[in-house]
Amino acid sequence: MIKKKDGLPFIEPKSDYYQQESTRLKYVPISREDIVLWAKFFNNNPTERFLGFENSDKTAIEKAQFWIDRQIKRLNEGQFGQLKILHKETGEFIGIGGVIMREFEDLFEYEISYSFMPKFWGKGYATELAKHFKAYMFTYSDCSNLISIIHHENEASINVAQKNGMSNHRSIEDYMGMKVIVFRVNRGSFLDS
Image (cartoon, rainbow, N blue to C red; front, side, top):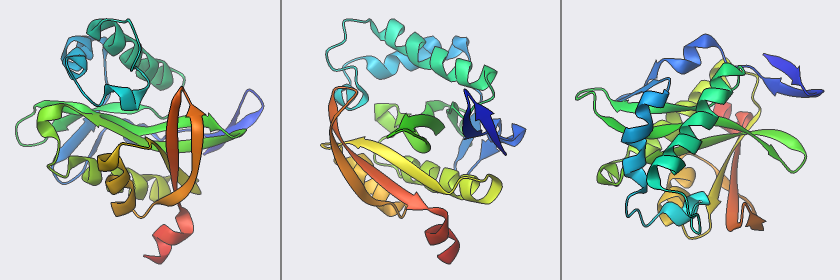
């Protein structure tokens, strides 16, 4: 459903957004109890520079708290947000991901985003998540386009975007202090596939 927020249109998620499953993954609301789990993501993680924390003096707990508090705020405000990702078979916490609303180039855009704990990299989970949320957004919402904003050196995420049918829309030299590539896919290409 498209609503107005601060005079601009935005899509409100249906309640089922916060409880979903894909083939191997389960997506559930994140909570403050997850801060300690998520803080482990920031311990000696070489990909932290892809997330805008490269020169941060925050501790791992502070970074995790900042991240999780943003998702809780989005949930409480009736917006899309990242969810806790659990492995369906083991119940293990493996990352955070979903759809987030971005104000981007004077428009509201919806971004597929994710971050997985390093020990779960290279197992196809990011591609599974990305394809799942693309299908969800184009099937159950009025969303006409989805983006992924990816650090220009993040080859793994670039590959995920391409596997998800996204194409290179443009490069931006300074987005949150990083050089990024914006990948985009539209509803028409999803419906045609």
